[in-house]
Image 1 (cartoon, rainbow, N blue to C red):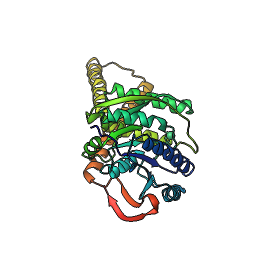
Image 2 (image 1 turned 45 degrees about the vertical axis):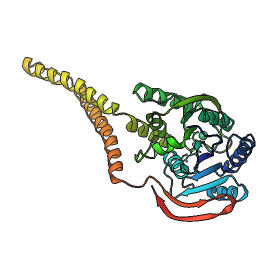
Image 3 (image 1 turned 30 degrees about the vertical axis):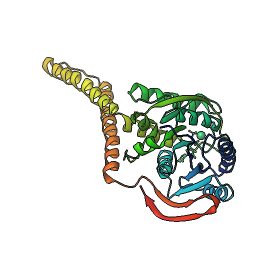
Length: 327
Ligand code: UDP
Ligand code: MG
């Protein structure tokens, strides 16, 4: 879709980000003002901070920004639902009010100076504009290594998504509307968006170090995201376990039959124990993987809301306490 002067919303999920929200709002205010002056986006463009159940003073910071800055809005979720759900909540809440929405991390590791180029790509007819990381400055070797492995493994499993793209991207209103038709409980947005099949383009940028604070992606949250990604995009692990089980079971049964037939003696105790443990381990692994998919099915059929909104703040300090809107 091409719009002459589009209305742009920037959606920023925040979890315990009191140290960065104020600075991020200042940077984005300057950017939006400049873009409006240049006639790139309309004056009703906004930045929307989504407080993902923070335990620190993030919501107070968002309220402060919204009161002093005419571009800032805030949405507070009832509890921490994770970055993907928080981002999805923000995108769904703004989709009827904008022509395009850019999602951005609160710590400005995603370079906001790329946004004007993203809007140009949108005006040229792209419904999705991915911002792909050329480098990941300021991140430790552990984080870079796990991220590298994460995208490669998903690629090998056949997931169709640009590598190293993160959640810094522009989505047109059309893309947001189509995304709203996906009713998954734990949406893995990076994997779902390519499934929309809309015209897209890729821009490259250098990922910067965090402005302040520490990463909110603990090892536990990273592993949860990886499981969410794999179980949402592919049934490949189930097939792997199935074929592994088949490959293991067939020769061992044949071997057992052969042993029984020739009545050979003296199978070492250690070998017996080792094979017992290996078999038990594989069995548990298989049950575990099937369990992961079952949990997803259970989450989907239980039909629980993906997020609930506690309060909202609009520019100029207009405050709206919403009795837990659900989606
Ligand atoms: N985030 C969130 N909910 C969470 C964890 C993270 O909304 O449960 C937000 C966080 O505040 C940030 C973005 O998601 O804006 C990315 O998180 P972070 O910068 O900690 O991840 P990293 O860049 O280290 O992968
Ligand atoms: Mg970050």
